[in-house]
Image (cartoon, rainbow, N blue to C red; front, side, top):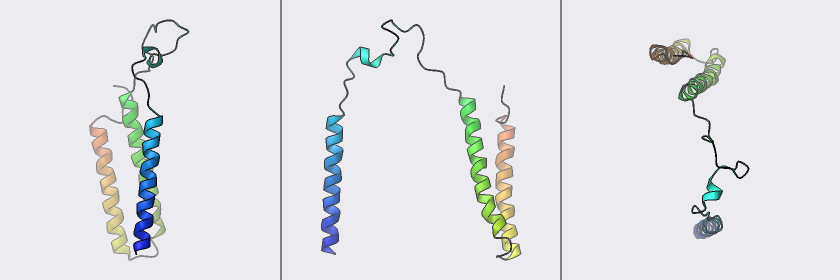
Amino acid sequence: MTMMTILTMIFIIISNIFMLISVLLSKKSFLDREKCSPFECGFDPKSIARIPFSLHFFLITMIFLIFDVEIALIFPIIATFKMVNFFSWFKVSFFFIIILLLGLYHEWNQNMLNWSY
């Protein structure tokens, strides 16, 4: 038990040393204005260098991910149909589908499924 404690302490110390070294070596100078500005052939930038972020596209992406995970959760439910009791399988499946349908109804009610406003 003491050998395990000693090894754990050694690993923690070595990890902290590496983190300290990385912090010391990666110091960046935020005072240099030229390094922080976008490069445009030596000229001052004419417009904003970053593209505006579409919040609606992000929300549709989140909806896609949620329903993508839902498909991954439905496959095991289908695969266990013949291995478990029908009534318990039906209760779990029905509860899962109801939660998904309530989420879909909420998104539809909030007009999240419309691409343009």
